Amino acid sequence: MANPTPGDLKLAYNRTYIVINPIPSLGPPTYRISDPDDISNGKGIEYNFEDEAPIVVSTTQAAINKPIVVTTEMDITLLNKRKA
Image (cartoon, rainbow, N blue to C red):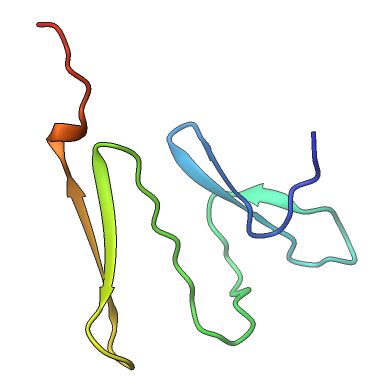
């Protein structure tokens, strides 16, 4: 298995895990459910929104220096056809 790189994402057990290495000199990267430390290097907080059908995530920004709007919706047309 390849060594994980900080920032890698993994989906498991209905959760998203991110690889972080809070203190590079002390240990290998590890998977965490959430990142307790701000590792954004002063660029602010970065959020990662992922979707899996039938959930659809879209982001829009009205103008520069305006907040990004994240919309999360469920598109039932993406569901598999199921027998009753």
